[in-house]
Length: 266
Image (spheres, rainbow, N blue to C red):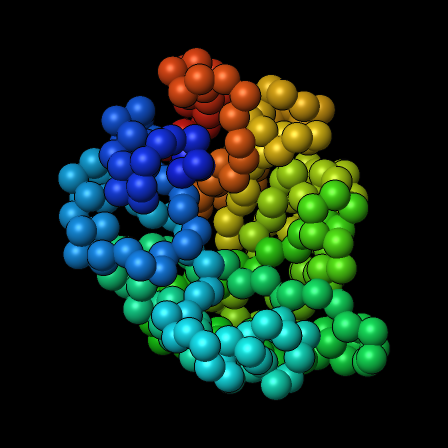
């Protein structure tokens, strides 16, 4: 188990946040956007501070054209497929430039002009196409369910069960679930059981407490028990804090290291 700090905990630009993460003892810093980065400088900064950039999202440098118009439809639309493929290829280049292991994919919102079953199949078709690229490039796609009760009303993929069904349908070793513990607590609860039952399909975790999506210890989730359960499964990939903070950085760093150090593989 390896833990990544939330870039948003720290101040300054992307590079300064990597610096602060490394100086505060984190192996990884997760900052999802990559557009506009100087990849040579980014890689040098990551190397200097011994930090991994643990995940990025699918984005495109191309602006003001039909690609981004189609992208706006989301993965549930067949006419967005080529846009996803092209944008994924761009994101793979960014990931390689910075040695990022994971690229996050999201489905976009549910449609009401066709059935959920058809939308599911369209998503699977797109994921199969980009998974072929991921396999060739040695990159992991992590597909994220999101909650629709608080943060992402209208989003298509919500439950662990449906995400697992989609990953099984894609049937690629390079396409797994991003299990965001905050989102899944809101959507369905039953966090530890759902993690254990689906651990072979999970490629990445996001960490945040509920309510508020701040650091563990500010809400209802017992993260010591959750981390203990994950460790028992033998999971050895990244767990990334994807949350805000309610205290100043020195106190936050002290408390988070006290939480994760018993599980952290240095």
